[in-house]
Every structure is written in C-alpha cells, then in structure tokens.
Amino acid sequence: MPKSSAFIILSLFMALLYRPLAAQGHSGIVAIDTLPLHDWTGPSEPLSYPKTIVLSALLPGGGQFYGEHPVRGSFLVGLETLLGGLAIYSDLVDVPHWRNQAKDALDSADALFIKQSRMPDSAAGLGVQRSNQIQFARKRSQLASQQEDLANSQIAWALGLHLYGVLDAAEIAYLSRHRDTETRSVRRAMTYGMLFPGGGQLYNRRYGKFGMLWMTLGASVVSAYSRQEMVNLLNHRLRVARDEHDADGISQLDKDRTLYRKRRNQYFWGMGLFYVYSVLDGMVDASLSDFDSPQKFAVSAGPEGSLACEWRIPF
Image 1 (spheres, rainbow, N blue to C red):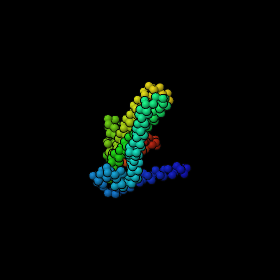
Image 2 (image 1 turned 90 degrees about the vertical axis):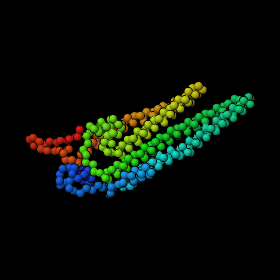
Image 3 (image 1 turned 90 degrees about the horizontal axis):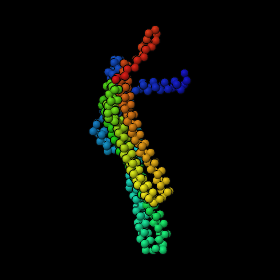
Image 4 (image 1 turned 30 degrees about the horizontal axis):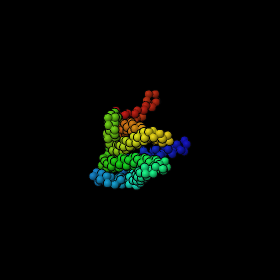
C-alpha cells in the first residue's frame, strides 16, 4: 500500500477514534455505552443560555469566546468589524465627499448660466464650461450612488453575520447541555426544508446552519434590491443621455446598466441555490443522526461465503 494511502486511512481512523460519542446508551452495546464521554471540542461546563445570547448580541463572537470556541469568535470579530467599518466609512466619508463635489459642480453650472445670460458674446465658451460642470456633477453623483449600493451590501452582510453568530452560539450552549441521541427522519427534514427555508436545520437543531442560511438569504435580498435601485438610476440617466444625443455617455451607461443587472441576477440565482442546498443539507444531517449506531451500517456473512452489506436510512 502506498504511504500516502496508509496515511489517509490512519488519519480517518484517528478522526473516528477521537470523535465524541453522541451519548451513552446510543449504540446498544453495553461495553461501549458504559465508557466515559469526552468532548474534546466543546465547553468543559454547561453554558448559560441568557449569558450566551447577551454576549453574542452585544459583542461579535462573544458567545463563541464564552463557549470556548476562540477561532470562530475571532473570525466573527474580524469579518464583522471589516464589513461594518467599510460601510460606515463609506456613509460618513466617501459618499458625502462625492455628493458635495456634485453639488459644488451644479452650483458652478448655475453661476455659469447666469453669467452666460449677461455676456452674450462669450455664450458659446461659457456653455461648454457649463456642460462640463453638469457632466462632472452627474459622474460624481453616480459614483456616490454606487458607493451607497456597496455600503448597503456590506452592512447587510455584517448584520447577517451577527445573526449567524448569535444562533451559532445558541447551538454551542445547547450542545453543552444536551447529548443529542434522537434518530431523525430524512423525509421530515426534506419536507420541513421545502416548506420553510431552514426548516430542515431547525428540525435537526442545527441553529448555526439556520443562521448562516438566513444570513445569506437576507443579505442577498438587500443586495439584489440595492442593485435594482442602481439599474433604475442608470435607466433614468440613459433617457437623459438619449435626449441630449450623448453617444459616448449612452455607451458607458448601457455597459454599467448591464453590469448591475448581472449582479442583481446573480443574487437571485444564489438565493435559489442556497435554498436547494439547505434542503439537501437538512436531509444529510438527518441521515447521519444515527451515524454511531451499529444498526445503520451492517456487514454480515451472505450465502456461499459472500458478504452482505446493509445501509438503513431512517425515512
């Protein structure tokens, strides 16, 4: 046997060997069921539900740190801080800066219009300057709208990630107090998942996965709506450009509109794919609910010296 294959098999064996038992009395074999349980990845003591929820709600990753999961907690702190910080900076700095530049350009265009009416001899040159100021204001205004669109998505994903953190911490607290030994039905998990997004995850008591699904769906809805707002803005800009016979502006605006339409549609496709994935994920979790049970996977002697293999799925 190649060394690489032997290493993989040994790693899988060690992973199964150190995998925490679901609960005493689950396998049906007395010699196994009476062994002490050791959960190497969970908290050492039962966690308080109120403390877990409050810490998670007030501090990104707070529940994870309390539940002795520092890696998850650090991930939540870093990503939420990054997304929220970028969104806040855009709303407080970038967007007002570009809005002010657009306003100043429009004020300058108004001043040029008044000057143009008072100086007919310089009307042509002043008209070109006024047109340039108006175009500059439109570009700055569009840039501010694009940055607002991005900030909307960033804050939506940050809030969704925070919701996931709270529910994931609740699952950690639940597992610290309960040893889940219930055998679940794949059919029920599929039915609940199809009737309600995340229903299969709730049925399997996978609250972290439920939060992750709704983080994705909620943030995708907000992002798709924001992209549609940009499409509406670009449609208006296109109508103005056509009225002004601005060929270069029409070409660029049409490219921008196509880009934002694609981004909007990608979020819709993503929501559909995550919904299908959530149904399948719930079915897999239900199928593996009795993974430790020897009655699920069985190998016995068959006729004429053959082997009979049996795999039972709890439908």
